[in-house]
Image 1 (cartoon, rainbow, N blue to C red):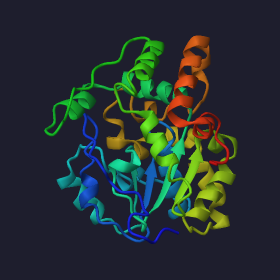
Image 2: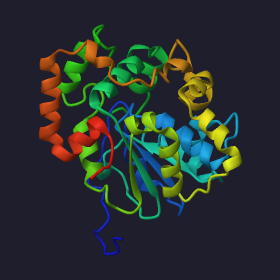
Image 3: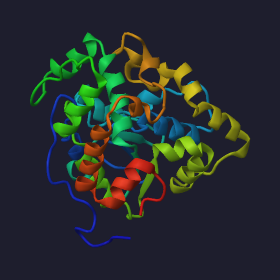
Image 4: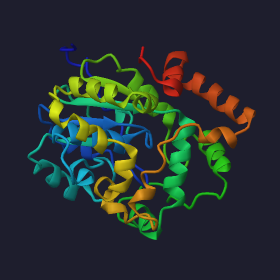
Length: 303
């Protein structure tokens, strides 16, 4: 376990855009049992929040997961509002981030769970998220004070064009998948970091939840196990999406249910051409290296 100064990852930069205000991490006061959920975005963040809430609260119904587990570096509401609310929490805190490691404050006190997913699946989920967003979403991201850089605009009608723009412009209109995944991959062997893959959760949710519980030092009440599994299913989460989606889904006219979409992989296979896929895979290999690119595409052991 690293003990020397400098052995832990250090924050080296700030990230600001229509979503991010990374400076909030400078003022976040860590506790010994904090949990940080990290993803690029649309890789299973809300699912992991639900899993952790269910483990912590023993399969309880009606948990306000979106309120309990805020996206810390989202710039709305501003940090002057968000930080006191998080500081006032009395349960074990579990916040989420979409930042690369070098843009947040990394603490040896906390435990970090990084969730990965094939970038093509991520983009399909991002497109659903973006295409269904309403005017309130755009106003919050573009018009509230503190935005740095260009506003986020409405997406093209074609999901394939959305993917090609994202690939060509390094994550446009959001942020770079490559620097996010690469930065977390570099610290995957730290004792307080756990890698989880969306495909593995789909394949063996009970086994992955037990692995997560062990990492977080949460003892599972076997009597509550059936309820935990039920409440972590996509069917349950979609039916109860108001509890786990920010502002109860107010940013999407179709409601909170559209935020928790299908939870399916491979929908891009019928849309992207062979050349599109080759371009993506070549880029992933170049940006991430063979081991990280393989893990991001397939899951399994992060080694």
